[in-house]
Image (cartoon, rainbow, N blue to C red; front, side, top):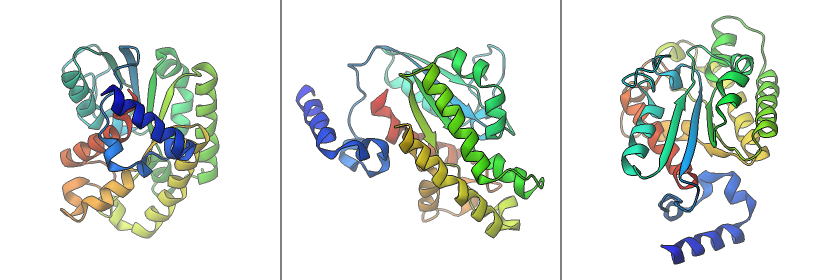
Length: 251
């Protein structure tokens, strides 16, 4: 394993920074690398976002419900089962209905004070919902500026934190199917912003839209997402697998 790890590090060095900032371009073989057990055993992992991350979680210390019922719960369960010797501490601070502005309003208490070693963020679909359904005036540029400010604040307070930026996504079903052109246009304005911020802050990037689009070859949209925005159980499993594919070896 040590020889394999040295070989992997050499590959990364030769490939350059681009391979690190755009994880989906790393080869499938490299994705199978084992968890990096040379890192410190204790790790604090924080999931931030909206209802997709919230998953109906409790806000007390009820361990039956504190993680919610979604992709981050599946990740938490899998990692703690597969690596019981690692002192992983997972936190879910997603809140249903949140936009990037809502994250900014609670960032100190719900993110910086937790001091995560790894911070995963999925945000953006409510920013689109606010424009299309509620008639809000916040632009994609506003979204990007606020998101950029959050990441800059985070790196200043926690310079060693590993950032994971997750791509917002939709499928053409449910409320999205009522105006798919507008939904697609607005989401596609924000998706490249998230990707560019991942590059700017040397963050890992999880391309969820690509994964859901590919999943349509196996089953219709309603199998994966019930209303165009919120995943079905199979959708959350898809998300957990895609997240781990990109992030696991960095824990």
